[in-house]
Image (cartoon, rainbow, N blue to C red):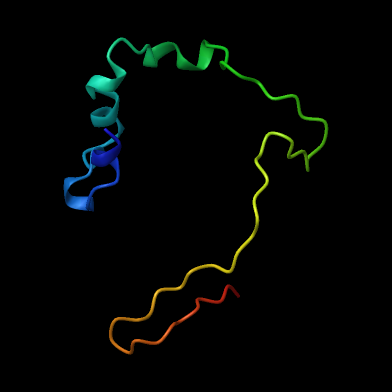
Length: 80
């Protein structure tokens, strides 16, 4: 299923809408009609808007910017 979700757009699962994903065999027996009435399997206890105890810590690194295939130069996209 994951491979079908991340394939090229014209072959991607869900190209014809969410119902296509819901009908995948992975979700056989899943009760889509009552999903909003179910309790989540894990509900985090949040004490503030900046709570982050449920996230792993990691060492930040410089993002990888692949070279442009035409110029062979690295082009960084800057957010404005």
